[in-house]
Image (cartoon, rainbow, N blue to C red):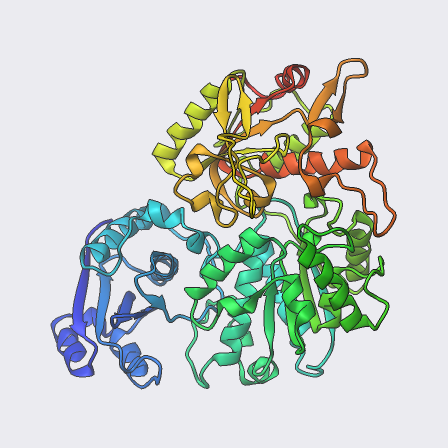
Length: 582
């Protein structure tokens, strides 16, 4: 099914009508089309190209575009065109040559007759458009880009779509639009929490900016919300996305630069929220479990800011109030909140407590404002692999050496072999990285006023390795393949393959057969520090919970596979019961 044709024309009605006289399929046949100038592109599908071009020529936002390409195929139908349109939108957006003008009312990814055959022709259509200069990169390069991974133009899973529709119905009741809401979306690793956050930012912005009478595809999931009543509710809303982690925040800001209607200034830290003198109509918090309690921050200036913000928002004397958290800042500074979280991904004692997270979830459930993401979108081993890893770490006696279709997971006895395997996957697919628990000091980290003399941070099996040099967007940095990422640079990101080094911060006690935590071999200063401000002392049993969760996160980064090397021999022997040896 490869017999397609792309007809090109200047974007004026005379030229398009001339084409239609030569081929009647432009008048009455399912087609996909692109309209662009040097900077902007719009992608659409229609059953009448001539009629749709007339509509676009009357549009204030599209009338000055310069050229049109119409993709024709003898066997195109409405479903195939809708599918091709959605693919082209997300590829053009991530490619970056043009800014995609499309609004996003929700793309559905449904099956239809001969879908696999149609999609074979999509690759050839893509290659032809690329040969005509409309794209600059190959599909594998595009798919590995963060802009693609966090694109709001992706099709949603069923539970993502249900959650977003429920959020819109909760936030935008036409009969009482000024209500206040706190919505919680719970999702495990790889269920697409960050995608939902970015998607909601784009969707609400598009609803507020849609032109009166703008034609939307009736198959769009959320087209009902692009009506005047809803538009007026959100028209003047101030909306922000809060991302507690610095590295992920910088990445999302970069993504927002590529999305029409969104701005990097909309992506905020909790401190940005607390310091602001203006409030928001809606704050969406990604990785909300990483919001902080009152504790010793990673930098003295942040400690000072925490106290100043507490006093500002809650009155003099609140600076060191241990009951006030960054979540309280978010609630104080906004009318509506959407909190995306996973209680099993809190990795430091300074994160929101498990009790606080559970209380949020209970309250949201009682108010019918708790929504859950279940579908595994990252790990090809699916939810079964995620649950298996947790069961192994928690010693819940899972079935030994389970196999996972389309997913490669194995343990290595030699670190050099694992590194070679990761570098092989990097050459093959890209985005293959090493990661480790914080079981080695970061002695190569540049420090103000101090000369760094150390050449490496860890020596294992005679190999010298260093922690990540880049602290933001490390996985895309040029030296990443030769470094080791920590939880702070990798949480929230996808990899094709992840090689996980389990350090001696975890070991197996051969007397009782239990996995335990070694404080002496854990070197994250803030990861084991007692909370002097609030008089909290963390026992080894408390820190074991966080370190296990760190390894859960690392072991669930890989899309296609996870490789494992274990420093403690007894723990390695235990894990060999559950993972094949490479």
